[in-house]
Structure formats: C-alpha cells, structure tokens
Amino acid sequence: MGDLWIWEAIAVMALANLLTRAAPFLFFSRHRPPKAVVFVEENFPPIILTILIFYTLSSVDFGSAPYGLKELTGILVTILLHRIFDNYLVSIFGGTAAYMVMVQLL
Image 1: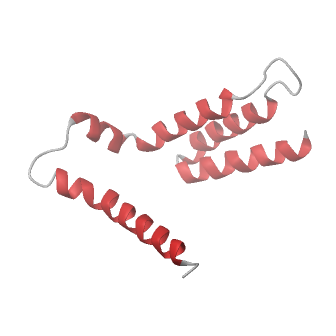
Image 2: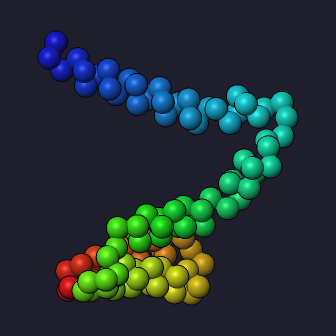
C-alpha cells in the first residue's frame, strides 16, 4: 500500500503522454491546423535552440571571470557544428560536450 503513489504517478504520466500525442489528431483531423501550429511544426528545432540560448545566457555574469566564456564557447561550437553538419542532434550534443569540457577546465 505504501508504494501506491508510484503507480498513481506512472498512470498520470502515461495518460498525459497519451493525451499530448493524441491531441493533434483529435483537434486537426477534420480541418487544417492554424498557421501558428504549422509554423512551429516546421521550425521546431531552431525555436528550441533559441530558447536554450536565451535560457543559458540568462544567468551568466558577464562582469566577472570567466565572463561567460564557457557558455559562449558552447553556443559557438553549436553554431559551427550546425553549419558543418546541418544536423540538430550533432549540434546540440557537440555544443553540450564543448560546454562540459569548458566547465571542467575553468
């Protein structure tokens, strides 16, 4: 009985996952989705990368050492890798790896 909350949490997560995956089919099965939804669908990876960049830079103190060097290095490596490989997964993982290396070095 003590572990009942675990099963309840799993059931809630499973239901939420099912609903989020089924929602587009339920709402847009009879008509075309709105232009905003189509825009997000077509531009989702760059939107996510932009949000990640703003989130990363929101807590950086550029006034003290290392002056955002770790974060800027990760962002620049991400941009460089995306220009070379044109693959969002390679860009994100490579930029993250570069950031983690900088965290260990600085």
